[in-house]
Length: 154
Image 1 (cartoon, rainbow, N blue to C red):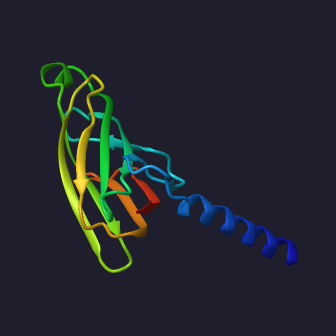
Image 2: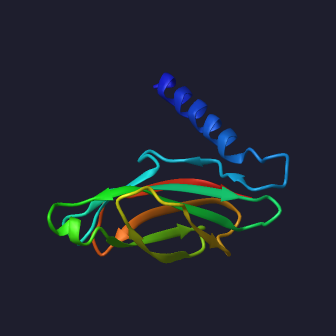
Image 3: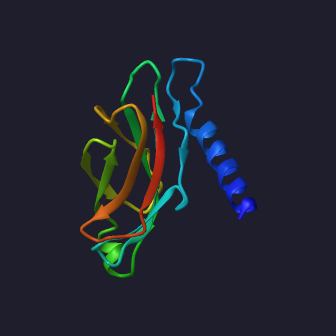
């Protein structure tokens, strides 16, 4: 029992050090975060069984307290022929949910994804709140494998 308790305390201390580290410069940088589901949302859409992945990135800037910039980057999509060949477009709504401990908020971002990787869609979230926040990313109306993180927001 002592070994399990010791391991748990060491794990909590290491995660706290990771999440509470504050960058020395006041420029945008990837946010310290902890997640177990990876960085890609696996998506299946409505047009010709379109499917692919959307990469999630989170940046914060210590000079802008309580804010985060989300980057949603398409990795390229495909679908079944011949319908996909006629209309290579996969329309999905990415839902960004965040909990600051006070309230839940959600922002829905419509995306029209094609066969090639695309430039990131940037979403600025204001009023996220400082401290550790739980952020989750999934798609509507089809539920897919989403992504969740505990994120340190300066």
